Amino acid sequence: MTQTSVIATHTRAGVRTLTLNRPDRLNAANDELLLALTDELRAADTDSAVRVVVITGAGRGFCAGQDLGDVSGRGMTFTEHLNATYNPLIRTIRALGKPVITAVNGVAAGAGASLALSGDIRLWAQSASLIEVFSNIALVPDSGSTWFLPRLVGYHRAFEMMALADRVRADDALRLGLCEQVFPDDTFAQDVQAYAERLAARPANALNLTKQALNAAMTGTLDQALDEEARLQQLAGDHWEHEEGVSAFKEKRPAQFVRDVNSPDQ
Ligand code: LHQ
Image (cartoon, rainbow, N blue to C red; front, side, top):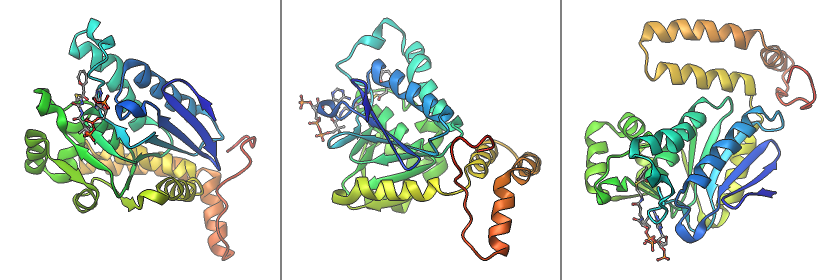
């Protein structure tokens, strides 16, 4: 376990867990936290021992959005602040060459809600909730909420959530497609780790290319998606993982997609 003041980090079985660590403030984000989290994500991306990244929160909150008591960003305009901190963080998550799980252990509000939605996989504790809280302080949803949310729930429900800032609880979040799984509070950390380890055993190169394909398809046409699939499929098919998957199928055994991290082609 390594620890800066704001992000606690530990790695187990190919899973790097980054824990937002300002529990007294429900992990509300200041610049230090946002920049440290972005740095940790970039480090995880280039570390061959890491196959999956988990972002979660310490204590009873996931992230309460911008720390409203911290004025460190206020030497800048709102636009400059977003461009310097939140936007690079969200872009880093979406571009990361490894799956990112947002493990939403408690309330996710404002930019914290955007962060919760930004993962490739979203796992919630039963007591977690999400609030598009921005309009309570007469701001516009940011950090990607205006992009993520209508794609998940449609324009009208997204607008309602943003305009009224009602709390969405886990059962509704699952029904609305804001998360993939809900786990009991008392086993949440273990359940997330087990889920992440299952993902870590999957073919890392193929998942990276799948993420690239889906990201491109989210903003493109069918023609573009077909071309991109054809391009990326070549990269997948040329990789040892594909050969291993086919061999395992023929030999009627489980595929072994995890090799020694020191292996040159890993
Ligand atoms: C907090 C916070 C917080 C500081 C709880 N700050 N202390 C981007 C760029 C530039 C500028 C502006 O914004 C943005 C993006 C954004 O994220 S804007 C949205 C900012 N976030 C909010 O407005 C959320 C404010 N918090 C809340 O509405 C509630 O705390 C929620 C609904 C999250 C949780 O409610 P409760 O479970 O009832 O907890 P609580 O309110 O009692 O909070 C516990 C403590 O955490 C409390 O401190 P205290 O010393 O009284 O125990 C809060 O003051 C503190 N806290 N959020 N964002």
